[in-house]
Length: 344
Image 1 (cartoon, rainbow, N blue to C red):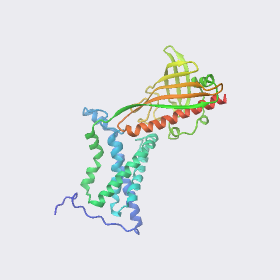
Image 2 (cartoon, rainbow, N blue to C red):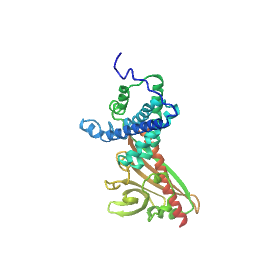
Image 3 (cartoon, rainbow, N blue to C red):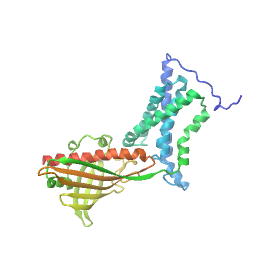
Image 4 (cartoon, one colour):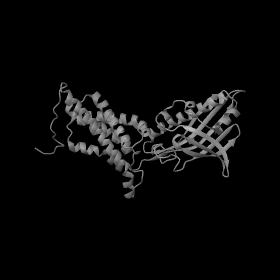
């Protein structure tokens, strides 16, 4: 007989349901194993760009926003979780839901170790949970049809890196547009004054929205003023966030547009995750336009058009998420201007 453990692994001894302590212990060991693997992959991909630059490859060949990490790592986490549980013969339901425990531990670990911030973790959770379940189901199907040894499991653990190397740089850049509007019970000149001189914005003036619930700082003020270079809009958010917009078009009382300028100190450390910071490598804002259209003597339609860029290897997921958060933020501004204009 061959001593190859990959071909002839020993058949696991199934535990009986009455052996609850061992059964629970194995489940937690499985979850911890999957989570530890995920954290190791996060560390590896966090430094992979340094290696690719040293090798003379594109910086987009591999990073934490690449398909290799985002798509393959949670699949392997789920598969490893179910594989470690093979001794208790996991059900199909356990193959779906037990990997969630691994992903939860992985995400908590990434926040505790400061590998990721809460914003990124929350945004990626739906994708990671779903892909981990897929990995769990694939491993369950494999265990039902064949014996899987340690050699094959070791090869499986390298899949995110192999996929990254074989696929190469897959980063793409996409510009999208958000169009939102509301009807305000106020004349255009009243709304205009609130837009160009929004001071002392209080938390209670802003609705409870997803973008702020996940930790994005709230706006504090947005004030237009003239400079030697032309009209600009200086904006401040909570926690020291600040940036400027250069006015590109202005028709008094009707329309105003500006293009944002973000500097290295616009977002102080800890205010936004690297992968979602505005004006960064992965996300940026383009021109934003406000248009006021009178409906009758006392009602005005306020329209906002905002452009944004997403650059990543997972745009199929990142672009819709960015659009959801962008619409959420624009709706927050519309609610603010509506409330202030009508109160005034």
